[in-house]
Image (tube, rainbow, N blue to C red):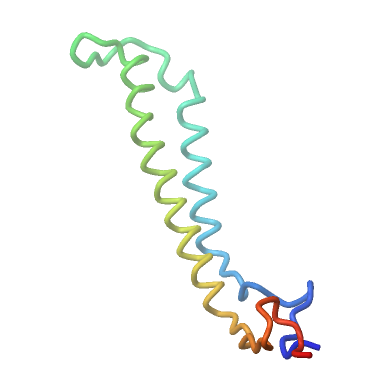
Length: 104
């Protein structure tokens, strides 16, 4: 029998903090709600370089959404790294074989 007792129930991550998930949810919600609320920007004035407000407002949200999604990605990967580091995996003691089985 191997010295490691890793089962399906062995935790691979520590406890989650809710704040990064809440912040990411709010940022993603803003990235979806504001561009889809058409009555808010369905007019022509003010114009920017001859483009009506309706068009440049939508185009303005393209880089904003990219930035918001990037922030969410950063928050989630940082939280995942923190959670993985919180769990101390038992050391792997292997036998003579590469598969980690008991030596014969």
